[in-house]
Image (cartoon, rainbow, N blue to C red; front, side):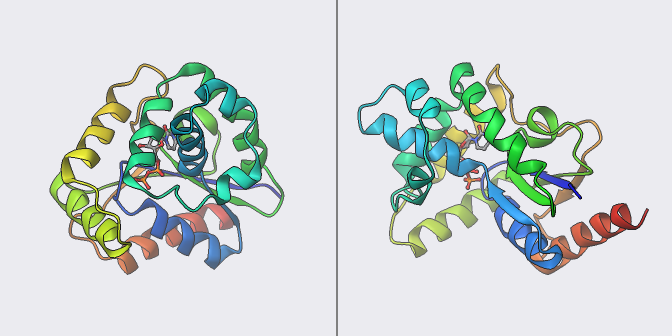
Length: 199
Ligand code: CDP
């Protein structure tokens, strides 16, 4: 059985947390697609051409320990505007999404471009202030500080790009985590998925 759950949204809205909880609950595989762009961005910072990096990406690139740094985050959103970079990453993502046993994919364009046929599509949002503060705390907690402006710059780049801009699919369910706790947000998504599995 293949069953795809697409979870899109801007930085620090809660996609990652919700995706991990949902994949654990249903025992589905989880792909954080942002890691692909971060890995390409990291290789670009190392001097490589981003398109070539995307075309030759390997699993070990996804295991680098610098992928969560603010520098790599900015580089990721810069390589993510390049059509050839995005195109090089499509097949891997689609194959992962349709693997048997179910998949949770989190990113920016899963419901709109990568998996428009996903069984469940969620778009997770939160106010810009809440997201910026969350990400700032997250980064300082990990010992590497990114500025609030950097998070905003990345969101702006993601929403205004020509290729696969960040936006909800027409049939996505919106979940706003500005005031919703993680547990409530997860419960809402679990209920949506369960209803689709049942019916
Ligand atoms: O963790 P966070 O939500 O801050 O970012 P991420 O999901 O790791 O993604 C890093 C960057 O990769 C984003 O700012 C996007 O520019 C890009 N990205 C994308 O274009 N499409 C995706 N499906 C996932 C990430």
